[in-house]
Length: 286
Length: 250
Image (cartoon, rainbow over the protein chains, first blue to last red):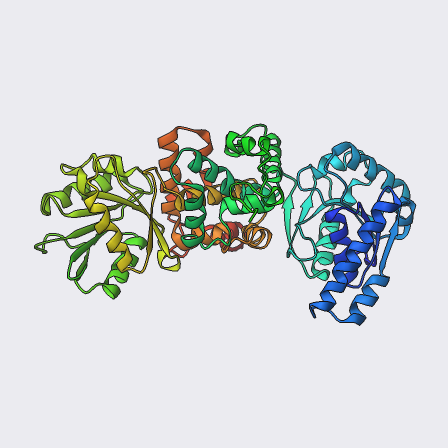
């Protein structure tokens, strides 16, 4: 199996930076890429600030954080991924962007380098479609915030080799994560199985069976959920949640179990997106 | 509310748990599945979910034996309280409730009253559950109410994912606990509460709305047919997953 030491991360947005931070905190070198220097510098400063806060909160020692910081490299040149044993792509969720990144990576890296995508909504098989050595391409889906959320979905595309999956499972464990393996299907596990939590709650609410507050209270008191479906939508962002539902619905060619509810779309149209907009199903402006 | 005579009716886990819980908390008398020997009855709690013919028959038998103002609390995972009440000669004293077995691990029970109900019975219903240290939440009378309905659909989706070979039972459970903070994985939940009641909710929703989205996963129906329903049975989803490797291998 490939010994992973150096990890390339494509994209320095929330997910890319979170993954890079996780990688260096666990003693691996991370090379974080973005298209312009300013973006990648900002992300690097953000990671360093988060690491410093860990020291303040006494969750890590100064020595640990100092050596972690030394493991972080930033770049605007993808050629710097040349010696990486693993590259994790965390670019925007657009198939053309991802496909072009993987085609470039194939030119730069050895054909043994594992190429992973952090996509939450696109098909692994489609992303790897034009790659010659597509057996080393797989999904490696982290949850936000990546340094904290324990789960990683390791996703097997139709052409992914079992060795690639094994290597990613081992690497996820080395990052102190809990990996689960799943086949390349719309929404993978979590985004798919969680759909009814939101969709059915919306329908129950819109059919006046119970109010938003009641539904949240019932799910927490009767079901021991930490957050109710409406609180959780406000937390995630109603637009993000709606996009996930639309994507799974489309991925299953309109299977009615995944049909979005029009009321959720109305909330998005109204700009009531949840916490980040000071209000969704609840108000947060006080 | 003291010294009432309560009868719990049903063969399922929920009936047994309700009986034990009332026994523990009530100062009055509680009986499980004995009707003919008892004189005056204040409250009947009826819990049949899956077999609606059986439910109807039991309720009509009860009605013949108790007075016309005896409160009847009926589990409404599969039908609305309004439909259940319509089977009775005195429908105004029926109140519906919805919970799964293992309810003692939660703190809240949902209740709904039928269109025909006389609201005075609602208060007695609430008091009865308060006796078991449970909060009540009154919701509109719809199949499966809120928690059983949402949870059953999550379990149904997990069953579809398993059928398609998306991931193993363990990995689906782990993913839902670690990826979204669910207190239990969907299959762990199903094994705990018993799959028949989940199936009853799904079937009830499918009948009520006639929509494809509520169609029970064929795997759930098969497990129920085989009696591999979790709860107090030995077999369930986890066993099902291993049947090819463990049971039948040489």
